[in-house]
Image (tube, rainbow, N blue to C red; front, side, top):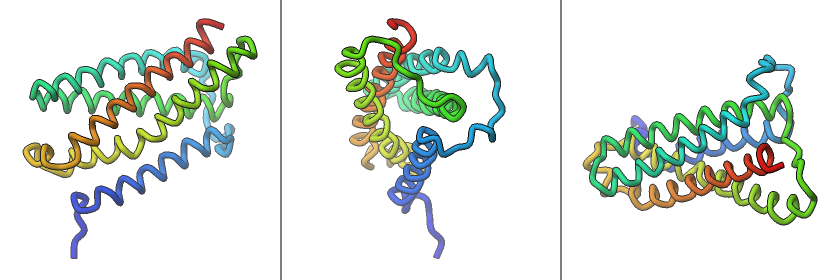
Amino acid sequence: MQLQARDRVRELTALLSIVSLAVVFATAGGLVPSGLLPRISPLVEVIPHLNAALSATALVTIAVGVRAVKNGNIARHRAAMVATTLLFLGFLALYLYRIALEGPSAFPGPETVYQFVYLPLLAIHILLAVLSIPLVYYVLLLAVTRPVAAIRDSPHPRVGKVAASLWFISFALGIVVYALLYVVY
C-alpha cells in the first residue's frame, strides 16, 4: 500500500509545523550554539532592515494573490503566493541567523511604551505568526497535491482566506515592531 501525500495533507502539515516551530523556538531560546554559524558582520547589522523590506514586499504579494484569486486569475494567485512563501523563507532564515548570533534585540524606548505598546504588539505578531505556520503549510500542501480544478472543492479557499489574513497582519505588525526598535527609538 503506497501512501500518497495527497491523502496525508493533515499529517504532513502537523509534521512540518512541529519541526518548523521547534527550530524557531530552539533558536529563539538560545539552544542553537552561535559558534556553529559563520559570522558575516555586515549582514548581521542589516538583517533587521532587510527583513522589514521582505515583510513589506510580502504584504504586497499577499494582497496581489488575494486580489488575483478573487478575479479568477489562478496563475497570478499561485505566483504571488509562491513569492510570499519565498519571501517568508528568506525572512525566517535571516531572522534565525541573526537571533542565533545576537539574541533578541533590546527595546531602546521608554518603559511605558515597552510595556503598553511594544510588548502587546510583539505578542500579537508572534501569536499570529505561530498560528499562520500550520495554516500556510496546509493550504500549500493542498495546492501542490491537487489539480487546479480540484482545489476549489477542497478546504484550500476557506482556510486560505484565514491563512492569508493572519499572515498579512503578522507581517504588518512585524513592520511596526521593526519601526519601534529601529526607527522611532
